[in-house]
Image 1: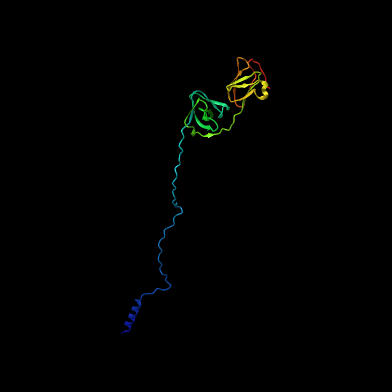
Image 2: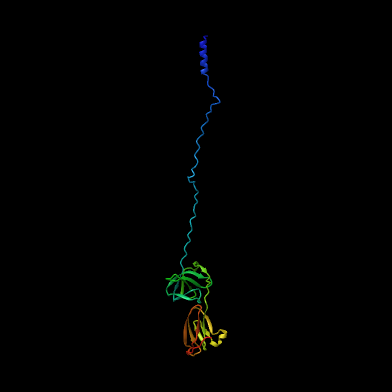
Length: 225
């Protein structure tokens, strides 16, 4: 065969042989799949919703009132006759009851047309309650009353009304029989040594006071020692 023909066949065969990769070439690597982006710090995270318990509104208690049903009622500073009178609940007038004393039958009221409070006795036919006292708070009033006295400084025996207190004459003072402790209120003094027992004085007693009776039914004046 002609040498030129053989040479061209050889070159042709070399050009058609597949090329092998060399170690200097970087092999193609698979492109990683795109990961989801991180959550932005500014994006608020969902919070759990806590169901709130509805506030239970207490049922209002029925109002309790007291009425001066058949006469005027004194309103006093505390729950006892010994306390000063600070007002009057007039006949037919009512007041809201806001408290009651645990140790006595007295109730605390809101004085009508006033910002003050006072106490009214339940131990009288003049007072009438509307409502249930079980709904009214109970407490003990601890501001004790100041003592008040009526003292006989005459030589006659005297009678104090109301209360029917007999005061011996001045000369029995050693046994304190010529004085009596009284509640706050108005008292009439009679000279029972005389036959007609004349009224000789009327005193309006307040807490802490002492009334000295120095004139008897004959108009004679005496001094207290």
